[in-house]
Length: 220
Image (cartoon, rainbow, N blue to C red; front, side):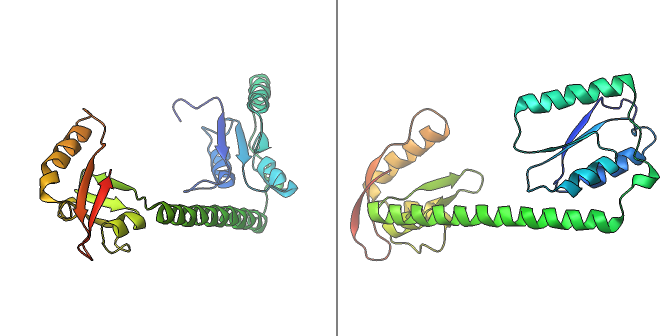
């Protein structure tokens, strides 16, 4: 409030407060009511959303995707109008009802939920394809959490070691127990060098599978 911004650009869908409510509260604040607001949205948009935004005092309502040049042009236009005549808060007569606001917000939330569900399904499909590819190639991947000393590994990596693939995590010390004794010191030194950033981790060694006792050659 002591140093108001020249312009606010905000998304409609935000985690703590939606852009419509943000604009309404900003325009109700005597110290900030003249700050112009540009709202934009990435979800499906209908005409009543722009009407709602403008009735709340927003200077512009922009739908993504848009070109950077379009946004810059909108910013220049809004700032030019503000310099010539400060923006006024929305009039009481133009204020939307709570029912109109809630209807639009509920619609946008449903659209966002649909987008998230589609993204989750796509991610799940990609994960399934990766699991199948790793199983066919007999290749796994793993990550070491330096804070906890735990290893996260793919299902195929657990199968290669003869461990329960549903575990997903295990202590580093437990994984090292599968390595044949004559290789453990070299692996320890390789891991220390990797952590210190001194070398890449590229080692060949042998393990004894936890479930069958079979000796396997490993490249990691």
